Image (tube, rainbow, N blue to C red; front, side, top):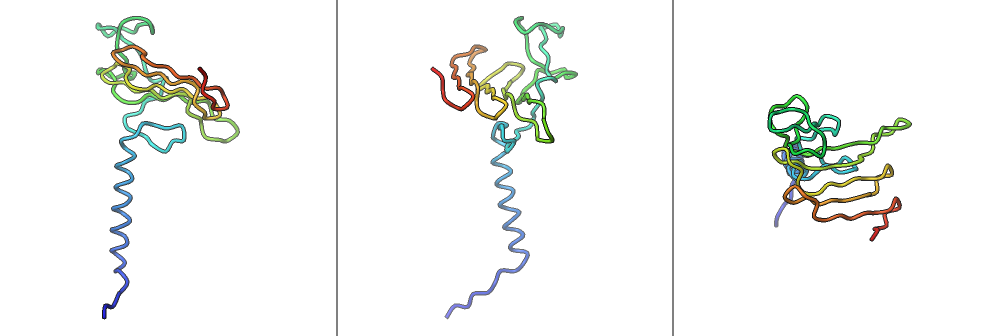
Length: 143
């Protein structure tokens, strides 16, 4: 006959901490989402970014250069997010998210409507847009 006994109290705490650690590690590999469920450090706000030429001077958007977080000396690597202004005591709504590596935009850039639905998705490769998808405000994909 086998007698089952309840696990000691500390065993439950260890299990809970282990599960939480796994969840946090999984979230750390995801890009920021409009729901705010995942934040992959480093993340900067769009208004904190600036474009500079090879001499470190500020330049326009269409000029050749790299993206920097304002006040930093190295080109930026990480996600940049923009938000719609919070209204009526609600949380701000994500307007866009994009990724940079060594000052160059890479991967997927996604923009959202103020209701949280996707607006546009651009895919970057070798500093150029290679793919674009668009949606209407109700979530229907446009052709």
